[in-house]
Picture 1 (cartoon, helix red, strand yellow):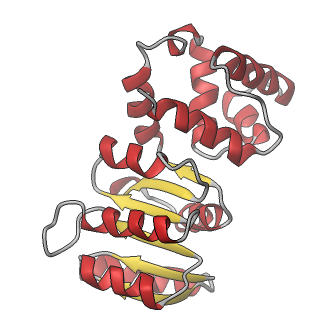
Picture 2 (tube, rainbow, N blue to C red):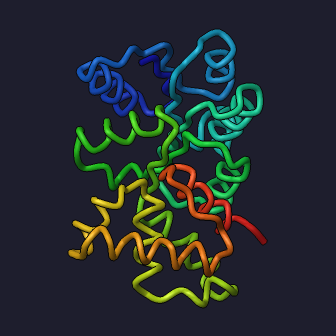
Length: 215
């Protein structure tokens, strides 16, 4: 699996390269600036991109803008954002095109190598990997809107776990309920949000995230 990595801090970039290589990823490019990232996208054919939002020279949103441009050129290109903070605007923009293969993790909340690698693989496969704090802020932003206000606390909890990319079995384990109960909550969520149910977990998650981005 070919990876393009963009991180301006040398120690973190080098550590990520070593970690990914230890799990048999191929590093197509490891860069530190926006222009270098744009060239890497143009010259490589990555299976997934791992990018910091803020890169030189502007240290604003260079990394994400390069990733968004790459997704416009190649719709559905998997992108996993690693950020220091919850950037709601950036998260909404990343989710806006409705294509799969998206992730948003917070650097200081990545504690486990295997969990991080699993997130990279999930995004590369077209799924989602969202940090709970990112999802919580997006949910909070929409919590006063109808029909979001119609969701019960339990349904909000299920939707948050869905948005993290959890399977029904994983949600049931986390909430200590049955998979049948999770399926019922999920059905209620889609009914209240007027979103058609789907057997494809990733598409269901993306539909919920797309709803959160509306308005």
